[in-house]
Image (cartoon, rainbow, N blue to C red; front, top):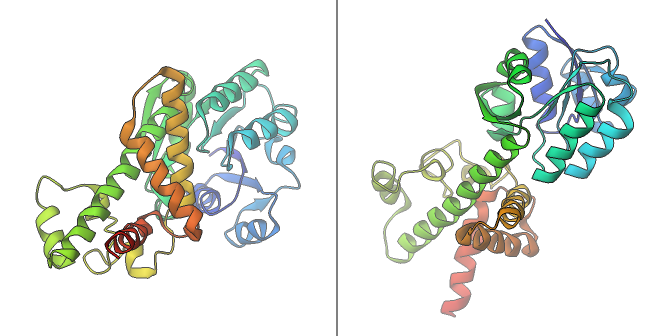
Length: 299
């Protein structure tokens, strides 16, 4: 079993680290937020005194941080100077493509192996060890990481060289954001036309409109009991995080001159939802924003 340092013990990182412990790994973790450290300690994670301490004397360092600037800062100031040569760095954060590539360069210049490995599956997937990992980096590093990632997820896809994990994540979540809006618009339309949510679900879930936003994460209460719609739109996956990912997809598209009209429009809609004060609610709650906008237009 491996000795692992884990930096970033928030809503995703803490259950991921806990699953590594359940798999028999030795995990030492750190977070700058005191209550995150307290929760991680309760989950059985050994608490390091700093990010550098978490990286000292381990074989693998995993980071799960909010933004690219945080990843680059902790790599430069805490990790590369404390980790031993050849340590495998796995960044599971969802960040911009340039920062991901810069993180690889920092690690490799210090003699470390490195991967970008963002995840899909949310807090439920992190808790149940059913995450999907989208991995970018060299083949040897990806093979080395597989038993570690397997303890935290059910699907590992090596997408290609450095940065391709972040590319895949941006593309995936652009699809998710746009499809959730389309699903919400359809359910609001059905309401106005007198079709029950259950009837529409029964049709769409077995027809050509079927998608994850309908069958797993249905945005109306009732048809899918486990969806946030049945729990006051408590995330789940916060709307602010969906907006972050849609912006990352837009930035990536601008880098290469790709046309992503629906993705850009989805970002605009989620921008309005966040501005209305709902960034902390689940992203499927966008249905309430769409419904309210329609009511305003009718008035």
